[in-house]
Image (cartoon, rainbow, N blue to C red; front, top):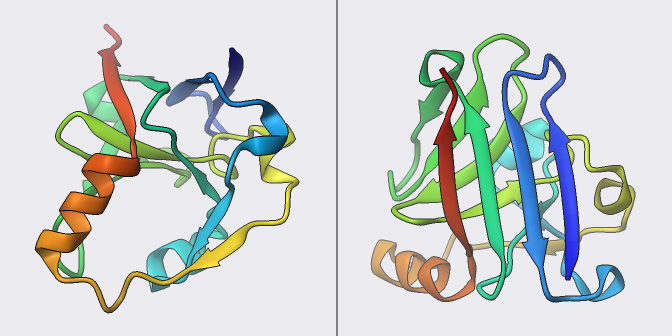
Length: 137
C-alpha cells in the first residue's frame, strides 16, 4: 500500500491518499481545462484507493464551473486547489497539496471537453478515488 500525505500552503486543508498501486505506477494527469491549467494542477485518482480530506468547512470554498458536475475544493486562506469532488469520489491535486513525490512527476495531459455531462459522471464514478471528508472542529 502506498500512502501520500500533504496539505495546502497554510495547512487548513490536509489530504491522505492511499492506493495499492506502486508509486511509479500511479497515473499523474494534467487536465487541460482552464481551471486546472491556471492552478498548475496535477491530479491522481485510484478507484481501488482511498482519499481522505480534512478541513473546517469555513476554511474552504466549493467552486463549480462549466458543466457543474463537480466541486473544486479550494482553501479560502491560501487559494490552493486541493481536489475535485463528486458525491463520494474525488481526484487529488498533488501540486496544491504539496505531495512532492507525485507533484515532481511528468503529468499526462488529458482533455475531457468532448464528454457529455452524463459520460463525465460515469467516468468519474469508475476512475476517481473513494472519498472520505473529515470535518475538523
